[in-house]
Length: 105
Image (cartoon, rainbow, N blue to C red; front, side):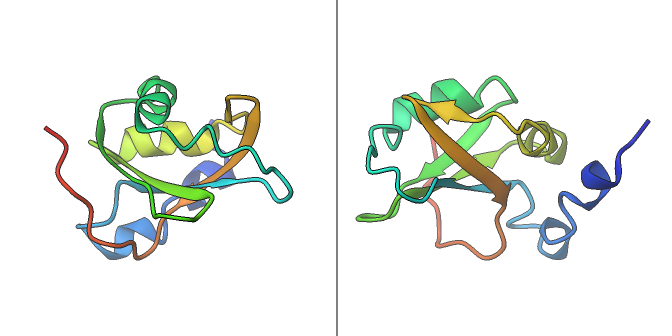
């Protein structure tokens, strides 16, 4: 059975082929610990949902952008409501427009 949440997950993502597989990840309000913002740590956590194509960490912000290889992988990450890295509870949503990302090799 497909839930309404699953169907609505990537409506914003379907608008642009270039951005369709990216998630926006934010630390919760009041969480001063930013140790989760380490690329290898993010890679390890989100790779359980699929192949990570890129991670972008804007300087000075408690957020990151994670790009997956497929929409299905992104949907799996979005359906998981228990994202905790280094003791920090994270909010993961579909990214709309994001800064240009570097290629991961």
